[in-house]
Amino acid sequence: MSTRIDKIVSLIRPGHTVFDMCCDHGLIGFGALSKVKEVVFVDQSAKALAPLNEHLKSLDRADLERIKVFVSAGELVSIAGYESSDFVIAGVGVTTVASIIASLFPEGLSHHRLILSPQQDSQPLRWYLNDRGFGLVDEYVVKERGRFREILVVEAQGSRIADTFMSERDELCREFKAWLLECRTFIAQKKLEKT
Image (tube, rainbow, N blue to C red; front, side, top):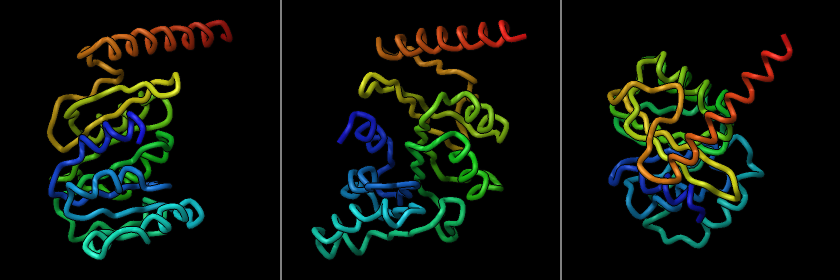
């Protein structure tokens, strides 16, 4: 598994159900299988789920009984009956992440946890989450193949979600914050030049 997937799996609460949304290959859900109650894999592409379905053939019956697979857009999944689950949405754009959250949690998160790792800069997603009144439990950054990847852990209660990455827990976090500031300054300057 990758550094990002390992980190995401470590943030999933033991004993809960995890929804691996937009799961593609299912590595996150498979990584969490040994510590969770149930894994629900969701992807709208049957073709993307082919490697996952192939991997299912190698699992024993006890594990298979704790797995569900849905070929569906994340927005259309029913979460009725799930009172405290973890929802991982990783590797997709911020618009898709926000759309899934809006559809699944119109009344708020209750006891659910979101573990989010969007493809792009998370600033618009942070604005959306903050406007919804959700709380930041923690934020992380990993570096894979020369690219920074943010991971946000969000629940109904937590700290106010800032519009930028705030953690300075280690050198990588400080490096990312500096890169992010430089990138946003560059973009703002380019916008000014166009006006």
